[in-house]
Image 1 (cartoon, rainbow over the protein chains, first blue to last red):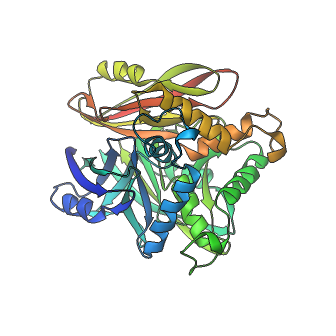
Image 2 (cartoon, rainbow over the protein chains, first blue to last red; image 1 turned 90 degrees about the vertical axis):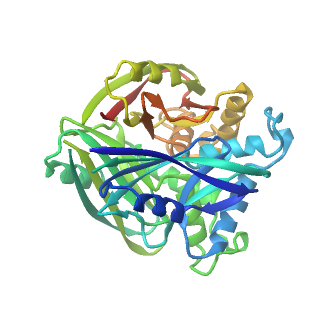
Image 3 (spheres, rainbow over the protein chains, first blue to last red; image 1 turned 90 degrees about the horizontal axis):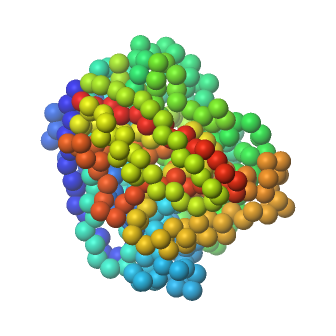
Length: 139
Length: 139
Length: 139
């Protein structure tokens, strides 16, 4: 059994869903492990991970709008306002989605559905560099 | 260390929670691995996975109603309406719950609480066949 | 490859987020495995797991309030009321957050971001003892 650890960095420019499937696939291609578990963790609490449809960009737009309405950027709703009006909603959206995703690699192929892609869901307004820990265990 | 990959197919007939615990347990019984990680991924973005109470069916009913209210099937709320009024709410409900669940197998026993069962949460109105990727790694 | 299974018990005294990062780190320290996957499952459906900010306690307060508003403790909203007004909202909050978290251990260090901590999110009003299954696989 072998293990590899790495970090993939994604630059975000404001709220929205950023497809990082190709970055992950390119990284997997370089590894010697053909079958195993890929554990991806986002090392932040104001951005998160989702697996979503990769076909119609309107889906990504609607997701962003839905979460904005559910956890509005209104300081009066929250006690934690010291880091800006987008920070507490960001923590909430992060709690509602995922900090980590565990995927299966079979014969060098990442087990995703035809319409599935991996997205970093950025919840902050300003530019950020987000670290996605990648850990592959298998043989 | 050994690995096994398989797919379990679940036929759904409209929205609701479908208990697939027995299908997973029957599959595990056939494997030679006694201790390890079971990674279950749903290869779709309009149905999802939850671990929930298996005692009172009212819990499943209330969950369905809650998510329907939270992400209503009203076209005017969304840009993505081309696949039907139930599709965008389905993506939202999927983002709010889980695409994958990682469980532990110990001495041939799946580590679930007494009241926990595995559910496929179907969010579409029409009949579907849903693929649940099962990947077991251990020895 | 080695595997270790254990349970960590957390006593909760009503709703809120309980940081169990130190309990998990102390447990990891005692294991011989230096690199691997840590799979944590909560064996209950009315409490859940989240990774959240460990800096400002107001974040935890706001999270609790947000989820209470989203799934209010009002019997008239639910069919499942037999276990108390806090039980169905607890199941909903559990479905919206996580039953399990999968983390990576590298060189004896748990891969968490600087501001990330592991929280048990208790959704019931009365005192409970919650079991967190810990399963470490690696070498």
